[in-house]
Structures are given as structure tokens and as C-alpha cells.
Image (cartoon, rainbow, N blue to C red):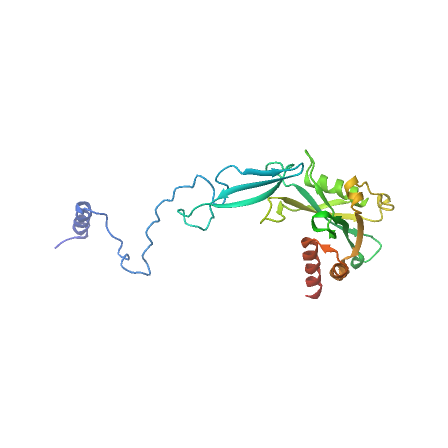
Length: 254
């Protein structure tokens, strides 16, 4: 009569003499079978969608450069031929940095209720669209500036108001189908009770003054209706401003 020890020894002998490793007893059951390991995929030499070669400069001016480059679409099979694309780049662009700041500023009077807060816009003539536009105050980031410092400086120059940085977004794209331009959106709070904000004086550049840049103070709850009224007389509204107005309207109706 075999003992438990005898049976264990016989089992070990059978495993040791087997030409292959033992098969899991659940392997034949689809509900328990583990999927076979995927074969290793070699890392691509170039990130999918990145330029395959240095961009070719098609043309350039003082401020802008037109480039053409080839890339491999990230969703196309590896055997697919590369595609070509053109893009506009600022000649002032710095590697790893956003080009500019856009400023979402809210004017507050501590003695007034919050619904009387005002959003600051600028209206100016823009030659590329041959029309006046309604935009957020904005400007390029100078060398050595942080986005917050640039926002406070640009806001003071364009509107005359002194603001305090509340928050700063990560770099955001502007028109990704045409350009690699990016901006930080900085939220500023402006206290109207401060002496420096009693009689704001702008410091416009010659181009801004020549294009008739002016500051508009719009009650937050009236932003969407004011933008629509401006469009009726031919002004063009910056997409981010209109999106902001729709968001405020949606929040008020919910």
C-alpha cells in the first residue's frame, strides 16, 4: 500500500522527466486562459507625428516664418508613405516655451456685489482680418520673463490697470492646424479700490495706438449679449472670448 510520501515522490519524478513544463490545468478553459504575451515592439526612432526631417523654410519675415515638413501620421500603418504639412512659426519663438500670454482679468470693487464684476477686453483693428476685433489683452513673453510677470506687464501697458496673478494655465495651442503658437492664459484680479487703479493710464506701443486699441469693461453677466451686439456692427470676436461668454451663460442657467 503506497503512502503519501510514495505518491509525492512519484509525482516529482514525473514532473522532472517531462520534456516540457507542466501545462496549467485551466489552460483549456477560455474563461481562465491567460492571453499569450504580446511580442515586444521596438521603440520608433522618431515619435509618431513628429517631423521626419528638419523643416524646410519656405519664406520668412521679421516676425513670421513659413515652414514645410514631412511626418508619419500616428494612426497610419508603418508602411504608409509620409505626409507633408506647412506651418507658421514665430521667429521669436523659444524652445520649450510658450510664445505669449492672454489675460483674463476681472475688475472688482470690494464695496459692490460680485455680479457687478467686469471682464476686461480690448478692441483693436487687425489687418489680417481687415476688421476690428474683441479680444483678451495679450502680448509676447519677453526673454527672461515668467508668464505671470509678462501678464502683469502687458495688462498694465494695454489697459493701465495693475492686477494680481490668480492662476496661470499650462501652454495652450492657438490654431494647431496652421501654427505651433502657444499661450499661457493668466487670470488676474484687479482691485478698483487701490489708488493705482483709480485713473489708469495706458502705455501703448505705436502699432497698438495706430490700430486704435481701446479697453472695454464688460459686466460679466452681459458678456455674451455685448459680443453678439458687436458682431452685428461688423466686429470679429476672438474664439476664446466667445467661448468664455458661452461658459458664463451656461453656468448662469444651470
